Image (cartoon, rainbow, N blue to C red; front, top):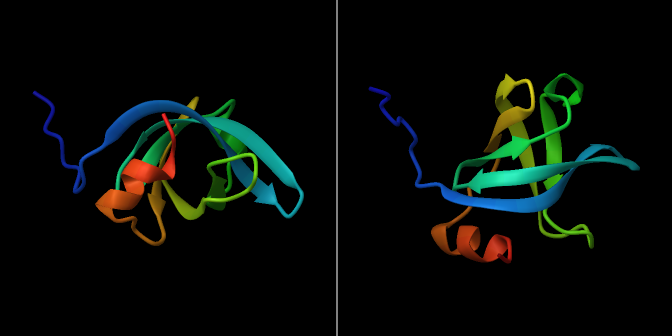
Amino acid sequence: MFKDRRKHKRRVLQYPASIALDADKQQGCILLDISEGGAKLQVTDSDNIPDHFILIFSKQGSPRRACKVVWKAFHLIGVQFETHLTGANVTTLVEV
């Protein structure tokens, strides 16, 4: 049986977000779950995602998090936030 080794409790959701690929180019994604330490994202193609990027949670460009990719699958990526969120911030970061 699979043992969950996550350090932080995940909040499952489906929320539109964007990945900043460079100063003026973004790629849409779906935020599938989030925790204090990271998130799981659904993307068009994980091969086009850089190892480090800024995840943008709204069309206005804020809030945002610097991310490091820790795993990739065809349409999914797991990221670690370079600065962890607090539990309260995870709850209010995205409006569901």
